[in-house]
Structure formats: C-alpha cells, structure tokens
Image (cartoon, rainbow, N blue to C red; front, side):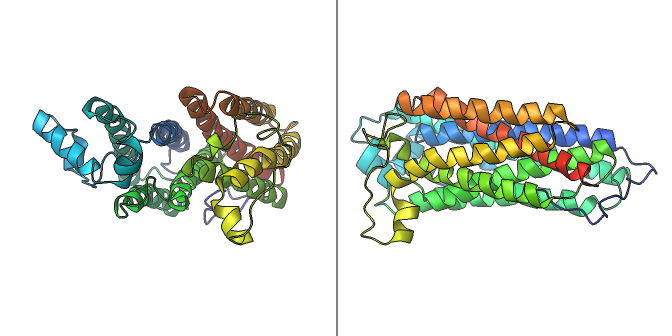
Length: 348
C-alpha cells in the first residue's frame, strides 16, 4: 500500500540541508485532513448529498449560493436529477432540506481544495529550500497527482448520477474508486512519514502485501455497500432477515450478482470482515515486539470497526453510527500502513 521510493531498502536519508522531521509532520497533518474528508464523504453519502451540486466549478465553486435567487437556481438544477424526481422529491424535499444536503457536498469539495493547497504549498516551499531528501521528490509528486486525481474522480462519480436522469444514485463503481484512492493516498502519507521519521526506506514484505489485499477486498465491499445503500438490506445480526446463509438470486450471472446485488454484498461485507480480522491479528502480532504501539493501534481500530459495523446494522444505519464506522475505517487504514511499515523495517 506504500508508494515506493527510488532508494534501496537500507539507504539512509541524505544529510545535507534536508528536514525529514518537518516533512514527516507536514505529511501527518495532511493525513489528518484526509481522514477528515473521508468522514465528511461518508456523511455526504449517508445524507444523499452527493448530487446536490450538479456542476463542477474549481474557482467559483468555493463560495456557496449567497442570495435567495442563487439558491433557487441551484435547487432548480437539483430538481432535474433522477434522485429528486424518483426519491428525494417524493419524500418531501424542500429548499430548507436542500440547503442541508448542499452544505455537506460543498464542505466535502472545499476540504478537497484545502488538502490540495495544504500539500502543494509546503511541498513547493520545501523544494525551494532544498529540504527534501534525495529520492523523495517523485514520491511527493505522485501523492500530489493522487490528490488532483481525487478531484477528477469525485466529479466523475457525481456526473454518473447527473448525466442519467433515470438514476437515483451515483455509480457504486465510481464511488468505490473515489474512496479507495483516498485511502491509498492516506496509506502513502503515513508510510512516507514513517520513512522520514525512521531515516530508512522500509520495504513491503510479502505477508504485509497479502494482508493489504485481504483488507482491500473488505474496503471495496464496504464501498459497494455504501454506494448501493445495501446497509438497509437487513437490520438483524448475525442473521440476515432471520437466516445465517440466505438464498441469493444468481439468475443475472455470478459476476453481475457479486458486483451489483445489495443483499449479497451486505452478507459478504459482514463475513469477509472476519477474514480481515484474522489477517490483521497476524500483522499486529508480527510487529508486537518491535512496535507495540502500532500493534495496539491495529487491534484497537479493527475492534472498534467491528463493533460500529454491527451497531450500524442494528440501528438501521443511524447516520452518526455509520459515519463513525467509516471514520474508523480510515483510521484502520492508517494504523495498518503504520504496522506494515514497521513490518518492513523489521525485515531490513
């Protein structure tokens, strides 16, 4: 899950005018902002706010509507979407409710811009001061490209619900790409900051790579569950509508069902979670002696994640419980990247 640097695994950082600790703290601050935007993105999805802004304006979009006429114009654009026509409109959406969902989408986009500036401006300053260690400039540029790509992916996702008036939601495929790219960026920020703090470039071990793959599947399933509103498929646990292994309809084909059936995806997300737990326990145990703090962080994160996941189901996807579940998912990714880095250092 790390963005590799062109240094050998054991090559120390250059000791010229570099400021590795300052760079590490900067990247950690950006990582905090990424965790925040993942939380706000989760709230945006849970409140069905993603389609409230039907256009993308990089500069003029910084300010929300400031007059009643401007609000009416934005509301009129939203009324043209399939979400309003077939879902929120019939449910009683009015201008006041529209302003609420508009806020979350606007705030989500503003945070994206803040993250871009919080990364770009210090990077330019460190670059100008020749404070970036040898081999790290390509890595920083790659992460900035990911940040820019996130903006494009975000609009690509929203556009899927705007361009087709028959759809009431954005594409869950595009949503998963948007979320997972953010989490990959978060992992890269954590890994790079750990490299800078330790003074060496850790390598990705095979066990860590396998564990990351197991976690990736769980995160992908979670993104699809969110995109398809599959959390509402059942409100009981551990059974689903009274059954431990429900019957599933594969008449549309196995691949289509595995990627589009909300009921099956909900069930898979529930039970693959335990496969992920086993993998994460293995990772935590691998680094327990060399980095006990990372081991505790992994155990704590997946423990809270499981509790919040079950509670989300039992509370019928209560907004703040579900949002906390997504927040903990981001913290889990950060802690896993930390532990994987420690595992890589242990292997040097």
